[in-house]
Image (cartoon, rainbow, N blue to C red; front, side, top):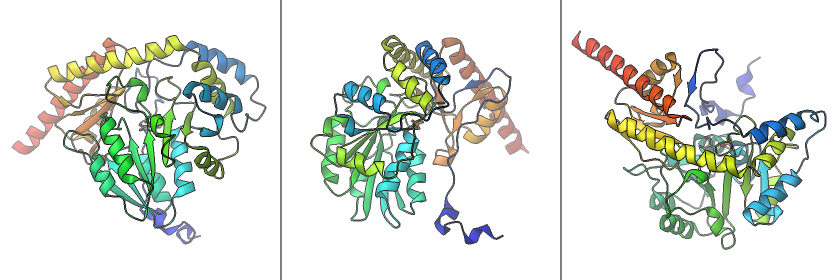
Length: 372
Ligand SMILES: Cc1ncc(COP(=O)(O)O)c(C=O)c1O
């Protein structure tokens, strides 16, 4: 059978999402390739999961009603402004499926979170990429200028992945005002909990005044729940009602719901998780600086740095030593690498020592090759 006759033609050009390498070996792996939280899940969550596991023969609460109410309390909003999703990634697909049609345009900051692009491409939209500025911050003026009459969504991950930078209040407000009612504006706040900069603003502030603002929050990072898939879309009730049309029945599984309900009560874990990310990004930055690597000051739980060698080759070399990092060559940053923060100083040193050793080996090899 010739399958190509049946696959929607525009999918030919689409490259699936490239995930970080999963850990399958017994080796002592330090996985820093996927911006995960290496503190591990809260003990309170593990306990809640144990209890919930005994009831997995039942379908989950389809609308995540209890969880929605709990999140509504947390954000001081009505429950009809929230849609729990199986990770923000699912939320991004729902938003695209609901609002983006064949031939529409979506505007993204580049590099940015690649799932914005993939979700747009699945809808056969034109993805308009606006390069980040020289300091790796998204170019909000450029994003506004890229909006045309065909634009459905402007996506902004703030903080930005992979750059770890933020866009501050004046630029966010200018962008919202310039977009006006011409397109939806999605503010993805995956790393919001790790931001300490007083100039940062959450999109939550704009929900009352701007009906086109949509906010994404994930619980993968702050509560170390990446393996369960849980996040939430926050928007005006009419937007949420539209999103429900494409929502998969039972989209958030019972374990994920139970886990987040427990995590939201665990203030001590939240405090620890934030403190760890801040301490570790400082330590990692210090080590990178000491070894002479240029890095972007981070507002997140990961760092972007220039390894000054081919990033794909470096990541391969580091993988062999059991340290997984993410090369950014595919995003157009040939020698730049993204690494999430370890949970302790010993692992910070393991990361830095492995990096230095692998980079040295690659440079030697290059030197050898160019000498031949
Ligand atoms: C900007 C951004 N948004 C969303 C996500 C995904 O979140 P989730 O695990 O909830 O799908 C990530 C994960 O790396 C991210 O960097």
